[in-house]
Length: 245
Image (cartoon, rainbow, N blue to C red):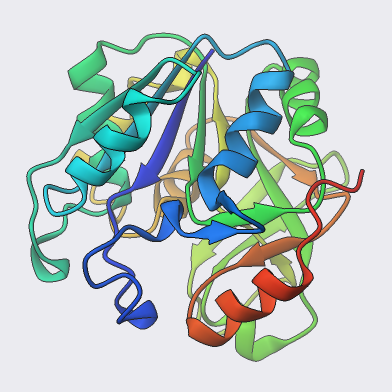
């Protein structure tokens, strides 16, 4: 399995911290946000290559970080320089697939989220289901549902519908940016883009894919910390304790 880390955003809501520095490399408890995720993933013993997809503005920072990192990390520069010209997460995934000729299972994650639980359970879940899988958690706040991916899930965990930032959410199942694509579905990323699936949010591809093939949703056993602005970053710095389960 390969791991793709989405890190091509510009994190404008975290200015001035991220005006000239990438959000995934900001430190929480003296460790870059991204390192918390990679250390956990590496301990599962299933990923043999990591690739960070970033933009031209931040590529140098990631290259310097990767050059001294103990894991085998490839840094891919998508060539964009501003928030207005970004490719979007789905096109960045396809960019990595093409650049690295990827044909096996892919763990795709956003590099700017923290979890208080291990991803090992999610990986085992996908291995058991033998399908592309996403993660989900119950969100009672309708205002938050308007700002994220929302999935409809049946009694067998299969996604029967999904929408990014819905005006009228059809469920309370939020879908954070953590995905496992089965190898057979990797070529469908390009097809999804050509079918106008939406490219800005990574969940837009899943919303399209679940209408083409079976996709399952793993219920998160813990909490996700989304670092979206300065207040949330400071709160995480004060409260995050690492993986607790």
